[in-house]
Length: 307
Image (tube, rainbow, N blue to C red; front, top):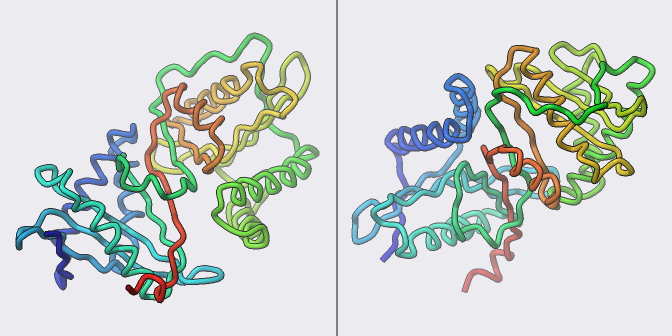
């Protein structure tokens, strides 16, 4: 029978968590230094986790880590880790641990619970909505854009219109993913862009591209070089709607890959919001692997779950 024992000393869990996450990040295509940076960030709030051993007949079979944090409107539960040792999988321990974590969060006032997966979880979190994916690919030679497609630096005159459209698209992505309300998404957009681009077009390590085909503007790109050691982060590589379906999506990615390599980085990373299946399909076909996937679900009110 599955049971749970809260840990006072979480050192063994931390060691196991670090090993598992490091292996997942490396398998997704990140170099050793980038994987360590990702691990450091994942480890950053580990001190706030409540960690329990998952046991069966007194034998430890895995770990589950949970926390509840204040969000913009209500407390949000988080499942920071849920792993069952390979020798004990397939016996219902994973589902029991997920339900225990949800109950733990609900009893502390959370109306929603989130998790961030660094490796496939099978069917365990199928009932959770995908909020977003972080994807990456190690770069060899970048794909060659179709003939006639070029990328050039954005001009100061083009930047304000691009910025306005980028913020609008960012808000839409957040709302479509179900992560925040429209009002909350606007607030997040204002805050994030002010933090990311304090110097606008001239913010160091950021590159802004205009994509053109046959002399006509077809899209734009925004990249941050050295986001992680050896990794360029693509905030957006956008093709205008009227030019989609012509292979320009791959051309935009090729432009981003070329820019990353030119800046001395060996990998390109993107976030794709949940609900954007077209982009997910494009990244999959281009060899971009999932580094992390964020999911969440609403929780019943504690009184309704008490029985």
